[in-house]
Length: 256
Image (cartoon, rainbow, N blue to C red; front, side, top):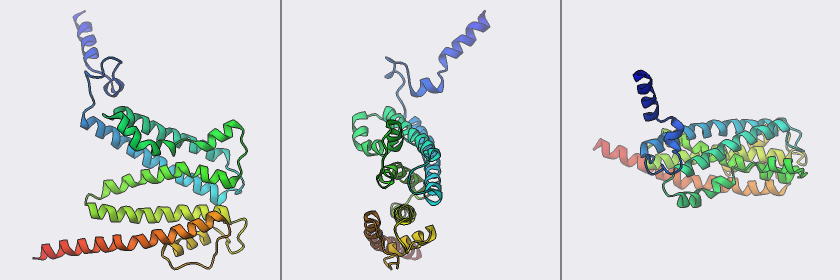
């Protein structure tokens, strides 16, 4: 009996992981989350978000490059639903762990809005949306995945200027690739100069480097990206100059 009582006592005194992060109602003030616990939650969720972002980017690439460009397949909708649910869980878990919940919700409402699986909701409602509009709606979770990728830069770089530089490099690479996907999806059926995804990727990189390409967009979306890509490329030069000047200053100080 004494051994059994001791076991029960230890069981009661050792809360599980669920009770650690989500205490019973009325006892929230007894076991507040520490900064260490919040960091553990944030790091775990960041890893899941990066994995989910990679999966979603691979799925949308397969869907656009190998799809029929008229409607999204059921397999892609399933992948997007699972990823969006994970993004929504990330939002609500971080919201529950935040000290100032109203402030957190106001600052992160955009993350919530772009994590909603709009394509799945439209499919469940029976709405037959043209691919032209469905692509614009379906790209929203991809934006959330793109923001999740930035976590990798924060892990690898600690210097502020270097972080800005590598974050911008990362933004240029990922945004250029996504632009090539969108351009290919919208233009492949109507643009006679576009013969494959390789042409679309070449078009995107030529525009982001402000060189230009011989493939001219036909659709309105293609023309919009034709303006956005050179603008993104021109923003790179002052950031690159700042990075080079800082590295040169540090090297000069170390030599002295």
